[in-house]
Length: 86
Image 1 (cartoon, rainbow, N blue to C red):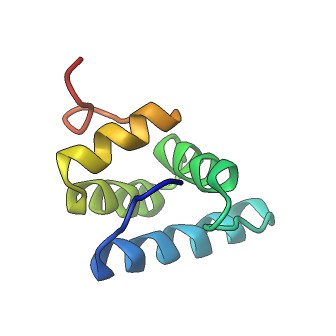
Image 2 (cartoon, one colour):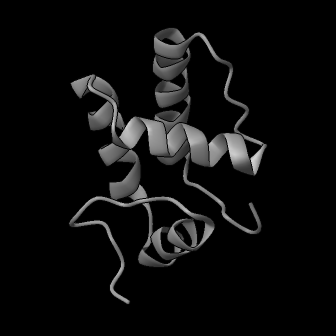
């Protein structure tokens, strides 16, 4: 994942997202694995569960514009208003 460093609040949101997604899908997401990490976030972004989407948006709100841009470069689809301008 390169040099992405998240705040304590951001990490707490990630753990919350992971727990909820693992319950929903029965699949273990490994946050240290870039592919699993992006898969987790992309799935959270389109989850039909409003609590998962809310956690995802809280996670995005905690990120800096540079972090959001880096996640987009890695392949994460960011919803408006979080998407970085090209």
